[in-house]
Image 1 (tube, protein in one colour):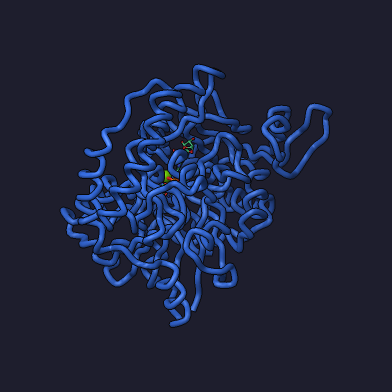
Image 2 (spheres, protein in one colour; image 1 turned 120 degrees about the vertical axis):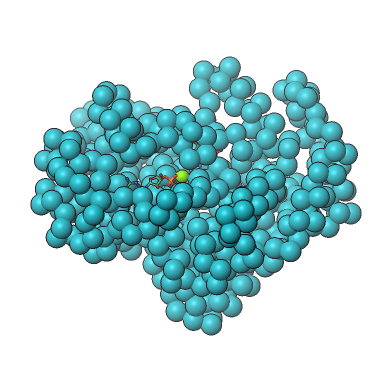
Length: 427
Ligand code: GDP
Ligand code: IMO
Ligand code: MG
């Protein structure tokens, strides 16, 4: 019996999908517990590349139950598109279950995401740079207790009542506050009723399934989406998503207690990336940043936006070790850094008054006044993609890994040397 939470430690896209896919071979249950189709998790099997947004990365194993927990927000059209796409590629998705409590992303959430972003851009010159998937507005309605849940979606009478009630209010906001086009509520009802009919077969109680599986001694994986620095409390607020991607969110978003969690694995890259707006202390604005972007194919899985690239930041990593209670790290993309002569790692931040701080600042106002303090480390050469043992890595790469481990204060148990399932080194 064991259960593991896999979380992102930076600003997302660390390669969580790959790590889950590898670990799911031994798991009987994989649970997504937060976020929605703002996530994009890549799984590579030989020549086949799968980009999963809502489906858990265990979906390829027919005997592994794949759950979408109560903390996930579900775009039914997006989910059905993913399921049908998988079916066309021979993956049945019969192992999928969706918690009846999960909130549904409605057309007004998509409109309001866009309208709010446009308003913020006009008002202050900068918006969050969301994925435009209606995530924030959907979680806001959940907190306001006016959201529609999967249970409602699958019960047409309830669905109609709730669409008419909530829809009326949302249309008022769209029209009167933003001057936007209201949603046609009758059409929304017809469209969503049809989604409910198709998704009803997957509706379940993810909390009960997870708890029963744990009691039966089965291995459970909690698949984190987004990442620590995108957490609504512990990220770079307000440039964050609207959920709790940190490890604690796995419990709340599934409906199980923290004592059920045996280990927490934090996934990182050997450098740092970010999509969307907001602070990024170690960001590279020169050719080196461009080189890493090109070499690492750093373009958003969901939106295709170029990812901002920068050096590995140990201050951020220590923040992730603490806020997630990490038991180990999985660091990907060492292969991407090969050939860069000198690598830099941020070991601390220097404040405006010249103090060095080791902990990530609490507010953006404080962070804005900080400069990264770098340590320079020799780079390494060669093709790492065939290495399967730590000792097979170039010596300078081994040194880089050991220094990262020391600075993070957390064991690095998995190293990524390529996107495929087998391109990892276990330590
Ligand atoms: P996730 O959102 O955390 O699941 O990560 P994404 O799938 O959005 O982005 C990670 C990208 O890096 C994907 O294109 C992966 O296929 C790729 N990837 C993962 N691990 C490695 C690695 O060790 N080396 C290389 N070169 N690519 C990797
Ligand atoms: P995975 O799971 C990277 C970012 C968006 C934006 C901010 C808020 O693939 O790592 P939202 O649409 O959530 O309201 O956008 O969060 N963002 C991500 N960045 N990876 C993700 O997911 C992300 N999910 C959201 O770019 O800056
Ligand atoms: Mg991603």
